[in-house]
Image (tube, rainbow, N blue to C red; front, side, top):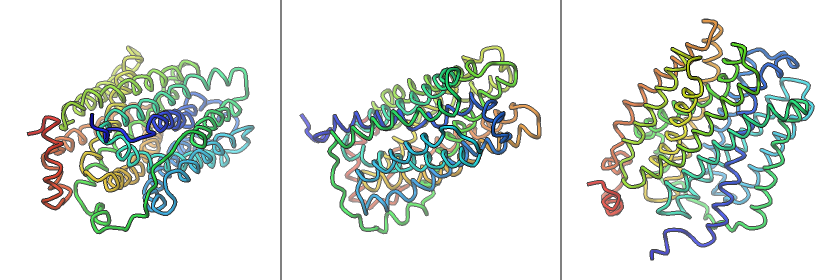
Amino acid sequence: MNKRLIAPGSGALLVLVVLIALNLRPFLTAIGPLAPQIDARLALGMDALAWVTLLPLWLIGVGVLLTPALLGRTGPRPLLAAALLLLTLGSALRVDLTSGALLIASAALCGLGSALVQGVLPGLVKQCFTQRVPLVMGIFSACMMGGGALGAVLTPRLAVHLDWSRALALWSLPVLLALAWLAWRVRLPATARPAASSGEQRLITLPRSWLLIACFGIINSGYGIVVAWLAPAYMASGWSAQQGGELVAWLALAQTASGLGLPLLAARRLDRRPWMALAIAMQMGGFAGLWIAPTSAPILWCLLCGAGLGGSFSLIMVMALDHLPDPRRAGALCALMQGVGFMVAATGPWVAARLHHVSGDFAAAWQWQLGGLVLMGLLVMRLDPRRYPGAMGLPQSEAESTAPLARSQGVA
């Protein structure tokens, strides 16, 4: 048995991955179903309400870009602890909200916490689960989307019995469980302070990095749009907050299943493009349904969108990590992709709000995302794993070291 497949103590780390992932999306998905109640009290309007989704996504991008430097100075444990504290504080601030500024500030704190997690975990997974990266990243993505489903479906129900702001604040409690597990059970590998190698410094100059950024940005722009506006779109047609939340929950449940399932199916071969094509096709079917026939089969459209979004998110993370054999450098590439990609994605909810303002409905928002998916389909065709070393400018010796792994996973 190859003892390097999974590092010692990684069972507790896997539990931590699950606990953290479950807490990364409720602060976003809980907002949409409560949008009318929030607007009624705080008088935010659609443009201001878009900032509750836009700002966290943008800060996730900025924070992920800064995380590699912070990781070299402090190591993964302090950063993960800080991330969980930020998530706890951000959700707790939502108790008895009286101003839109405080709601947006709480979203910003949660966004920074999520940024630290998403900057640290991919490289840590690559280091501790060397040949199980697709599985563990699939678990991470599935649990993150599952947490989003819980946020969407439970918060409107809690708001029936509690004030809506207190229902939002309750999501600070499960974060404390993850923090306790980190302190009690998890041993993380020491991270030496990395020297800023010329290879890592020039990642941002590589066309391949920008291709990955564009794909990641398109995926998460779609996620931001549906999380922010799917429930309000149907509530504008007479649906209740609970019914709108259930639609977001169906979407998130499909994300959960696909976020785990597609990476497992794709793990048989290093060429993940056929499965990414399937994920893109499902998204296109879902967004086309929301545009052309929104009331004919809304659950089906949500399932298609969710399955496509969840699968493509997991796969693009795995494909980014596939590009480089060294865990630290692969983590740096993943951080760059997420950092700039989330800043691109943050524009999605705002663009959707502007399109709604101009057109009077959300059809233009779904059309906007369909156009992005067409572009992404063209870009993904270039992600041939046989060309990864050349695309990343690897030295010949390092490129040759990746060849046995590629052959073992079915790439000629």
